Image 1 (cartoon, rainbow, N blue to C red):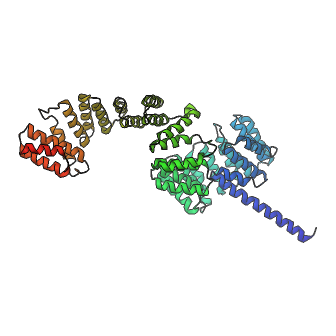
Image 2 (image 1 turned 135 degrees about the vertical axis):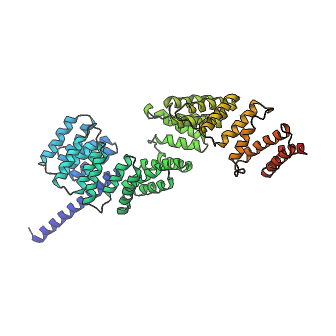
Image 3 (image 1 turned 90 degrees about the horizontal axis):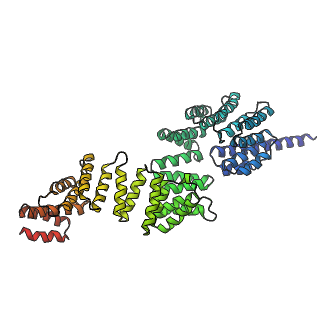
Length: 515
């Protein structure tokens, strides 16, 4: 063969191998970033057995099982094909069959191919098998053959994480940091472990270091967005999630996370817009009907809320339905005037989770808004019967008792509120108001001390509490005129009322009795 032609062929072969390797590297980064759609597309460019396996891997992670099965079967007689089929056996609870396929794959490569060990470890770690300890031993085999290889340490850490051993996972990720100090992935992986452990103060610096080393690190962006969402710093969470969507797969799941951030930030219109973008056309993302239903409720579009929530509930397995689904649906019925259906639906929410105080309180608030005093009382009473009721809980119950003309009971409840919070100004006001209902003539001025105490508590903030301050002062002026025959005192009080509320007709009428 001509020497120059031989060199050309050798060069072409070398370039092909280099391109395949680069492609695999890009694809594996996408695997680490959990960008399954992009990873599948990347690995589909190659017919290399390992790349075909990772194409199937990405398909499995998208739960496209039939496609993955076909992919693995296309190399069924090859070691990587056997590993992929072993994954299917593990998910079918055939551990013995899976182990046989894994051993065959390792033996056919004379137990010297680290890529095979890594693939087996990843398959076990990502399977639905209850026991995943063997993922650790396969990853260790790869690492033992190249102890300073950062990639193998990452796989080893992932294997530990699949067994819920976050501490050992981080140990391996820290080794990876030592061996590859300028790469982002170890920091992102450590941040993920701390995130899962809910130790966010440790997760943040690692995730931010990952972004410093690699500004488009998808894994770091994912968990930073979620941490700031949990911290309720929604603008920062949105920033990270928006960037993630721009450079990621633009998956419906990522877009749904952004919609959830909008919802929690009370930006309901943006949440609705985002979800409509996802579900337009063929709506296979039924779970988003829940969030858009909640968002429509919050924007006062109750019929739309009912439409989406009913659609959601029709197709959801019972175990995936939560109390707030019935809560929002019931509140929507009530808002549209169908109180009977609303109450019946809301009671399903309570049956589903009778110990969720936030849900019960939200329902009580809804009955209050709908001016349904009997139901309001029933549910505020439930709130105070739950562990650690607050002064505010008792205030709400007392107010509901008053609406149901149970004034003596309300007075006792306001006293409980003050026992929990002695400086609770609103409780003093409500207690005074309640005593006026109990004794409208106020011959003994039974409400006087409570109103005086209320005014002391809000001194300096009269404008902010104007309506109640005016009511309390008018009461004291009446007592000064009627019970104490002290016209001068009454005039001083009424001057204060008129200064605060010049249009008070009652103050002007009472002023006639001070002359």
